[in-house]
Image 1 (cartoon, rainbow, N blue to C red):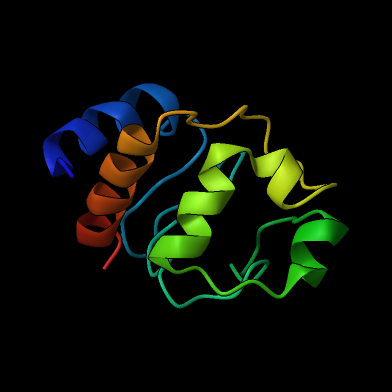
Image 2: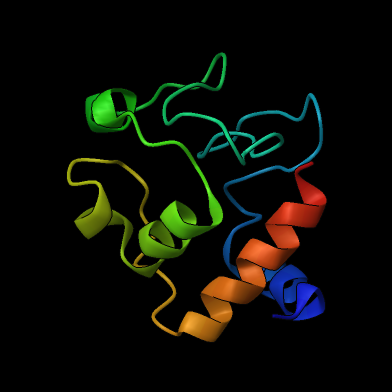
Amino acid sequence: MSVENGEKLFKTRCAQCHTLNKGGSNKTGPNLHGLFGRVTGAVEGFSYSPANKSAGVTWTEQTLFDYLENPKKFMPGNKMAFAGFKKAEERNDIIAYLKVSTA
């Protein structure tokens, strides 16, 4: 796992829709600060899809790994317009970066 590679991937493929900092704004996607251990659909002020609100998934390294491969397959009906990271190494890198940057 490479935090550095994860940061590059986040900046090029995620940052246009998500912020990471505490108190950061919601964009097209919700702010990700405090992501690990949070239940889907829980960011204050973000307009989630009914599928996301009712999924009841707690974000862990494993659930993120599965979700980021194919968000639409993992959670049918969610509105995240991202095809996913097909390579396991990229998913691990993003997760390593998120563990550091959202705590």
